[in-house]
Image (cartoon, rainbow, N blue to C red):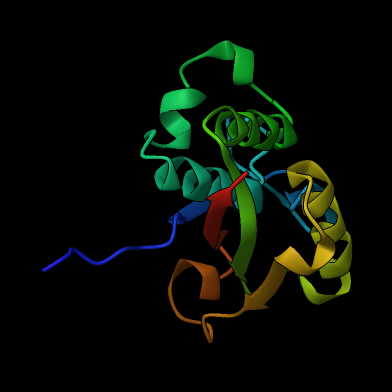
Length: 165
């Protein structure tokens, strides 16, 4: 009996969270979103881009974002997380993969993501070099439960499908 033949795909998932801190905006999906506070982070704290990077790295079995951009390394202090995505996308392409699609969920009570979701999708599509219809951004609240419900922080989950380049 022959073993099953699987299509050449890879799937990765990522998760990121940051506590709110001082500031007047948060970076989400490469978009500056006005908010009553910022986030506590070594880089710009973009939970969408961080979760996406973890999903991409996971699909490649290359560890996580902290291994590639350690918070102990001052080179990444205040870094633009778009650079992290570019790096991860380069790793994909070097290994013969491309993003098939990505689906990202932001978990927070505020800021409201909906008014900025299209700009986030456009930014991610450009960073990944894919068509807009391959990028999904959506948001949910945690119904006032947990740290996101108490508006102490923000989280994001990402799933990515990789296809041969």
